[in-house]
Length: 335
Ligand code: P6P
Image (cartoon, rainbow, N blue to C red; front, side, top):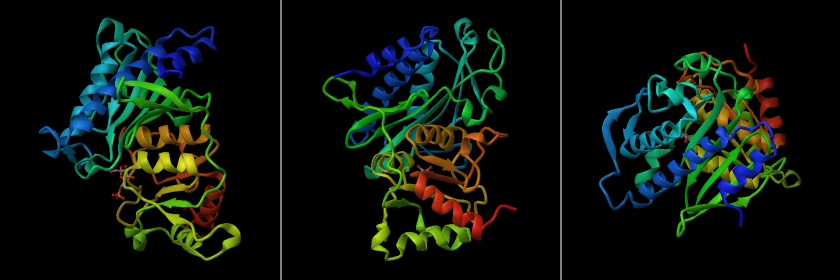
């Protein structure tokens, strides 16, 4: 029974030059995850369920838990001094940590503190997504926006916490994807899924088919491909869509499958955010042997231009990705 803390240290010890800062950063995330998990599990009992009456920068109604989770992760990341700044779905601008120690730290964190939070009130699993980079600006100076606008290939770590039937933390530092399950009686995360690999193909497709009429033709063709009766290729597949990215992603990671949030007529860039949803999930899926693209281009090579920019998101088993990208190329070619 290896704990998350022990595993982080063991991974750090494989790098003689490691200074332990990333380990401390990941420990901050572990602590924040425990605090958020406790509140989510009691949310039905206290007045923390429901909406704040406010909207975030996205124009989305902010749940009380969104703000709670945002503040918990910000505080935990600032407290240990390993992070010089944070970007969050719940914050319009970057958050600069200006303590003497923070301005001399080398990491920035981007996060969706509580993704899928509209599901809290109906007791559906939700999650926290995080992405870690080394800053580009000089140590000793306040972090700047360009430190956050880096392509996903420069991530040094990424992961998510899924607050579900059990609470898990899944992360990568570029050496495989590892999952830890929380023992609620002790509040300890134990290694439960070492070196997760997504099956090269699967039977699950995850997409909001309510938007079918607004999808690109390539996506429509792929959905019909999924629904055709072809026992030799295990079709029809199964449609599974929870409306919570972390939950759909986690199930597909373990069982094989594909998640698609494409561009639509009303949302030409799709819905999901490049920096703190798509890039971290893309890092994880590639480390697990899968792929992630915008339907044409590898997600992690997209050069960001804005903090909250959206991109179409296709992510999952490599052979399923080949199929859908082939149909996008044929029926909805990039202009
Ligand atoms: P829709 C939640 O708001 C989220 O960002 C993802 O977690 C989820 O997969 C998607 O949006 C759901 O969006 O438009 O299908 O309700």
